[in-house]
Image 1 (cartoon, rainbow, N blue to C red):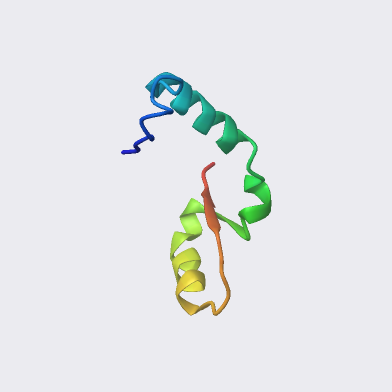
Image 2: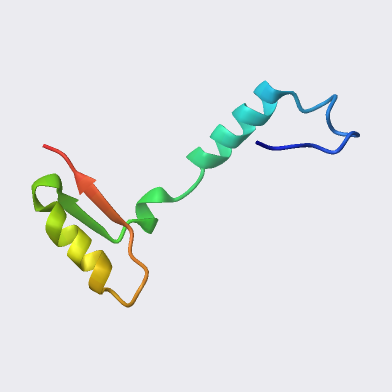
Length: 64
């Protein structure tokens, strides 16, 4: 849940806040954050990779 200062509440409706958040999410470079794409069938290896890694990883399980 989010709150706004009293001065902003009249201008920032719930719908406007949601639309702004969704617009900002679309601007994120999501693809550049994914370090590995692993088929769902190989999920155990993905979890092993996450468990053993010393560096930040973002693993995406892909589906056929």
